[in-house]
Amino acid sequence: DQQVKQNSPSLSVQEGRISILNCDYTNSMFDYFLWYKKYPAEGPTFLISISSIKDKNEDGRFTVFLNKSAKHLSLHIVPSQPGDSAVYFCAAKSISGGGADGLTFGKGTHLIIQP
Amino acid sequence: DAGVTQSPTHLIKTRGQQVTLRCSPKSGHDTVSWYQQALGQGPQFIFQYYEEEERQRGNFPDRFSGHQFPNYSSELNVNALLLGDSALYLCASSLGGQSNQPQHFGDGTRLSIL
Image 1: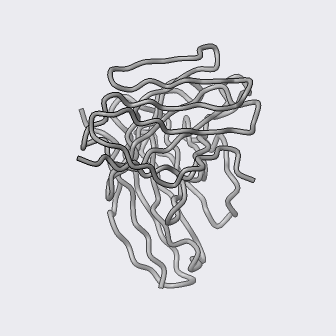
Image 2 (image 1 turned 135 degrees about the vertical axis):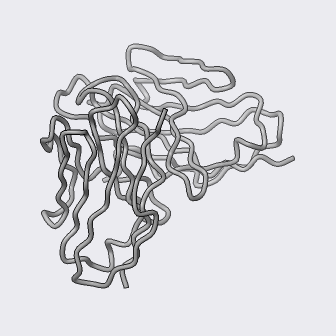
């Protein structure tokens, strides 16, 4: 039972264009969402997060949108650069639910930026 | 500012053996979480340690155990290794056991079981 789903295993985008990565979740208790980027042979690097009290969070070229009613979030990268080529993971957790904060991850989307 | 460090980077074991992986959290962090990432999958949460106690556990058997030391570093122990335990083991650290602060990951230990 996958609670966080990234349905696109890979995505190819031209340099300079917008990259849009999607993520769906099923657990209504999730109220904090994160995006991580992973290069081969390295650990995931935190990119951006959003709390369920917001519907948008922006940091430089990265913007995350959250649609709570659809249980959907997306990461927009504008403009896309060659260094953005990596695997992107969507992750979620429940802060208000109490207890500790183990993250639930999707399977990742491999973003390839074409020159 | 030292980030999360893990050792060793690679390890080869045979079925039935035991293994210990180590993690030092990012400077200033007091909480350590462990994840298992199989090939082609996202990381799966194993457990989290805070104040030297296991606070939360994912869906992993008792063969997986851990420890946190007073300096906040942590160990992951796996007993009676199975072929299916072959994976990348990631350690992540954060501040506080429950917060809206992101977890920061190390580069992982690649464990291969023969």
